[in-house]
Image 1: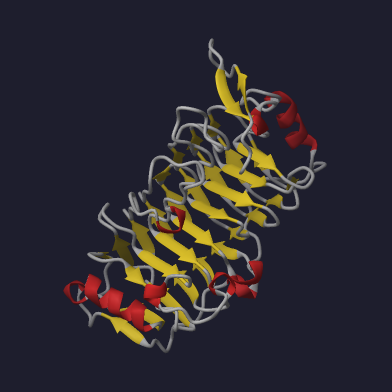
Image 2: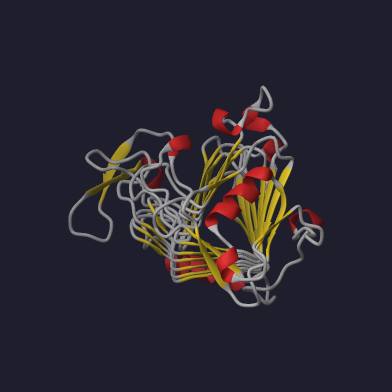
Length: 364
């Protein structure tokens, strides 16, 4: 958000603290009982909470029966960081043959998509973990990065590469100190083209602990083609730590999150956005942090529990600066998500067009 007015407000303490102007009327304890009463009656007796929702064709895993590149030749030792980096750079469909058991590939360099690729599909087969070892980002795509080759005159809005991450675990990624494109994206940073994540796990990823708009311990997305949504389907986000949005984070990007789980993610910054005087900013959106103008966040069939924000939105922080965007929640459960300073509903801070569109869901 890009507001500069700060006003003092006492929130759950005996001393006054400065909060962003947008939070002035929404301290954490405001209206909880009333909101829960609304939750109980909103759906007129229909069942509510997490329920599997249909997945549109565009959001499903893609076929990898005919891969362009196979990492490994049947043993864990044959699956190396170097081979992953080379396969991703070549593009196309990438699969793994590391043996019948789960394997961890320790990434000694970040795998980077070259923008001449029309698509890059990375399929771990449910057995492969790519680990950043707490030292580096795991996967990177940026259509506006000259080092990865410019392919159009409109790098901020181009259709390719299409990056698909499926049946893969990404663990211990860390982009701390890497502030290109505003920083964030401990496991994955994508600017431009199109991104889809299916049946994948993100565990223990990190990015910088401070910054008013910096986020995405697991995934940071920017500049998606024609405003199409990033699909996140059947995926799990656990134990992320970042200034904001320790599962997902973006500016001006739409998301469709289906049948997924966010547990134990923490927005660890302090000072919110715009940052309070004397602070470094951040601390909002324990699981998901989104900002921008005309964009949409859809969450359906999803569980969000025990996420935490030092500032606002223990589970979700959503702000449409021009109030043209909206948050939609269907068949989901958001419980026990802590917003330390401000929220508009339990675990959520929202500013958008009209109220949050919530149906068949539990928010407590």
